[in-house]
Image (cartoon, rainbow, N blue to C red; front, top):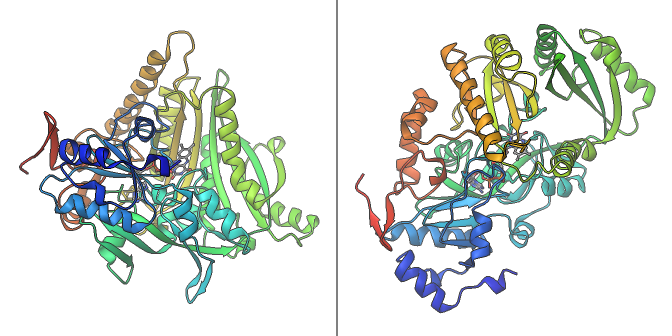
Amino acid sequence: MVSKLMLTFLFFHLISTVVLALNLNTIHGNISINPSDIKRASLDFGNMRHVESLAVLYPNSAHDIVELVQMCYQSEKAFPISPKGIGHSFYGQSQVADGVVIDMTGTKVSLQERKEPVQGSTGSYVDVWGGDMWLNVLNWTMTYGLAPKSWTNYLYVTVGGTLSNAGVGGQSFIHGPQISNVYELDVVTGKGELKTCSKEENSELFYGVLGGLGQFGIITRARIALEPAPESVVLIHLSYIDFSKFTKDIEYLISLHEKPTSERFDCVHGSVFLDQEGVTYVLEVVKYFDKSTKDIIRQEIVDVLLEKLDFIPSSVTSASLTYFDFLNQLSQTEIMHLGQTGIWDAPHPWVTLLVPKSKIADFDKGVFKGILGSNSNGRIVINPLNKNKWDLRTSVIIPNEEMFYAVLLLRSAIDTGEGTKAALEFIINQNHEILKFCKENELEVKEYLGHRETQEEWIEHYGDKWDLIQKRKMEFDPKHILGTGHHIFQSVSVLHGGERVTLTQ
Ligand SMILES: Cc1cc2nc3c(=O)[nH]c(=O)nc-3n(C[C@H](O)[C@H](O)[C@H](O)COP(=O)(O)OP(=O)(O)OC[C@H]3O[C@@H](n4cnc5c(N)ncnc54)[C@H](O)[C@@H]3O)c2cc1C
């Protein structure tokens, strides 16, 4: 397909003179201005914003990306460039107006870059292409009996896509988010330089890019920490009506994060269900095992771990799964649920809030039992997190408390008779109400995966870290070429009457 998309000289000429004022015909990767490619690049899971680029690059290697960014950086009329993974953002973050989207997901380049796992001095790792999907990374490493340590609740997202945010899930309380489980990166900066970075080498770039919302560089390779892949898991669900018992148990379980594996669960997260009867909280706990561990031993270990918890005794359900099915079942059930109910294509004004432990009861009262009423319009997931598993030198922003919760409000705007627009407006208004409630009640909540329209809002989000973010931008992307879909920094040039005009800063 890609070869069909190769531009003819005429197309390049058109783009270079009229649109980008650059000689893109010298780029070796496949550049497309095919309307269907441009349309695809303007879509994301959120399905609320559709900004069309002028072209899409399908790179064959990191060097194709270097070429494009270098050409852009060296031009007087730099244009915006945005890497795109699967496009599972919600608010058009990987889209770009009047510029080029880089489709990072090409399987050809993924396969070229994927190497066998290595046993290093600090542990096992694997080098993967930045556009590789986590599901494929799991499949690949499992053939060597290994697996990444930290996961998102959903595997159909790319390595670069989650590392530019954080990547949180049920294992984060032990291992930290995915950005805490990376040894090294190759990054193409906004100046078009391909740099290897780690805690020791080019460390400012390394920390900048992790959680950096694609502002400082494009991740082309990531060295991911691995552990021996568990062979099977026991998955247990426990229900609660009393929120304080639910959070007390969660907080106890995650306080065991440094204990030997036999004395703690390996994955902990919760869900919240709302209906006319009230609110039910469900805790999911998971224990990893070797295949050789006998059922009776598994049961004994799990029973001891459950002993101290205060759930509704009759609510316990338990199942055994392979490790792969366990990690993927969350994806499968999500896809099946969303697909079967036609929700997949609906707008998804999803919001994830990081709520400090000391404020979670207020959040429960004001949001779960207050603003949301008896209908959540989708799923609510809770991931408990420990601050000491996050590296504060990265660009990510988290609450200033030892423990906090990621509350994922995964809601879809479904037409229930009054039209999709009305349904979307209803959820968006509720989202605003929730944020207003948090602000007015000083819950010190931080938004994760969120969007903002103005730099002022970003300055407020970053707080004390804003100076560092600005400094990193100046150093690694001084022409504001990258990540314009987030509206943190204004693009340095715009198209005006078919001409690219440079703005004064
Ligand atoms: C069903 C579903 C479940 C989810 N569950 C979780 C969860 O459990 N935990 C969690 O943390 N998140 C979760 N997310 C959010 C998801 O991790 C992010 O939206 C992520 O960015 C999606 O990755 P992507 O590959 O689709 O990236 P895209 O949406 O394509 O891009 C996201 C951002 O990353 C940038 N980017 C993409 N590739 C690169 C790269 N190679 N280098 C630098 N920047 C890059 C883009 O420019 C953009 O700013 C979920 C999303 C969905 C739709």
